[in-house]
Length: 257
Image: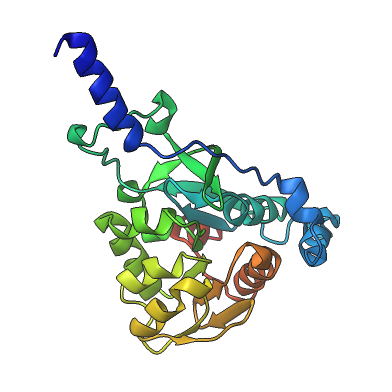
């Protein structure tokens, strides 16, 4: 067998190991105008009545590659429109081993990849990483869903410890869609009433949670939601919790003296 024949044979094997390319698009505009999503459309397109409602609040978004686009960017847009400072916190920098054979773009060093359902659609720049933040840095943290994002996060020891410490401090921990599995890994769900995406609800029950099928559930300093269509309810619940709970960070307390 000559080199050409060997290369051809290897290419044939590679082709059998490779799935057919198929990209499905889900434009955000189509999501907002789809039948049944009128509440979501109204939420995003109704003018903000109080642009200082969350002024002085600082929110950390914990996310990794594979986060659901609207579940991060929707709440982030809303919280910023209300005057909050929002930072994107990624997992610890832990690239895949070279033997995995992965090829990633240069921007992956300081960006995380957004998806729409299961399709990669874009990138969001990180502000910090989980091993660089402290509990005192934020008034609330929230974790968007996405089929891959939670698995990338729950493997990161810095993420799990941070979420645990944040919850122990009595500050708000919010998670939507698949994200509650991160809280399950952190052992924060025992005895808690919560919700989540349908195909993880058994996992949440096994983690000790009291799971209900509702758009948003508030239990103490835990807020959970089911899926992208619940983004409005989720964002409003987080906002109301922050308005009704006065959680001061050290620098805020110092500024009042």
